[in-house]
Image 1: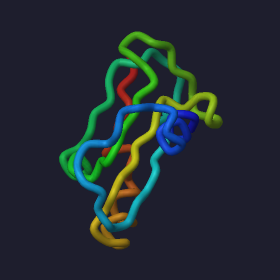
Image 2 (image 1 turned 45 degrees about the vertical axis):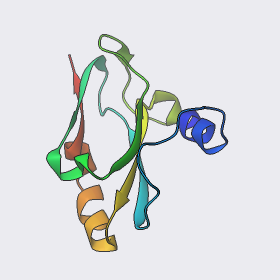
Image 3 (image 1 turned 90 degrees about the horizontal axis):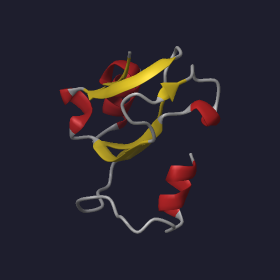
Length: 103
């Protein structure tokens, strides 16, 4: 979450691409359900154009611990949906849309 806060408070100079849009926003914490070594993050076509900003804190080969709290997060994604129904549908299955691949 510190990455989200850094961006929000202007502690990072990069800005998200594209114009600010109205809609339903969501934050998703990238995480793993098991220990391993980070290989990749697969993004489904269903959410690819919904991602407003994404930060991944791991690189290939970095150790990953099972998610138990923010100290074991792998990054975050800020998403923007057209409707609450779309948000509910996609967020309910987000681990399959933003899939952490481990070795």
